[in-house]
Amino acid sequence: MIMLACFSKRYGTCDPVDESGPSAADEVLSGHLEQVLRDSPNVMESEQESQKREYVLGALNDIIQDWTREVMVSIYIYIYIYIHPIYSPWTNPLINSCNNPFVEYS
Image (cartoon, helix red, strand yellow):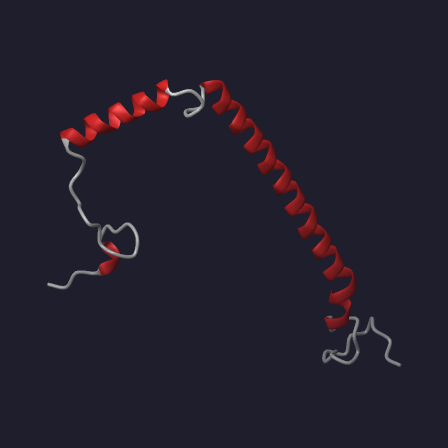
């Protein structure tokens, strides 16, 4: 029987060291660590801090998307105005091979 590699469940480039889940001791230690981090000042962020961080990251995302859109539009306009006519068979008689009636040849 042939097994295809694309159907196997794989996370990363190599096989995992251990496929078993966390043990009961691991669960207890994780819970203890989370409690210590919550009790320590300035380690875990509060719900209000989390909401503020998400708001700021969302605003930054909007700014970056707007800037990217503006840059891409300006590049498209530059190409359409300055580059496109040079390589267009309708405006450049050197590459016109279809005898365009709208282009005057000199």
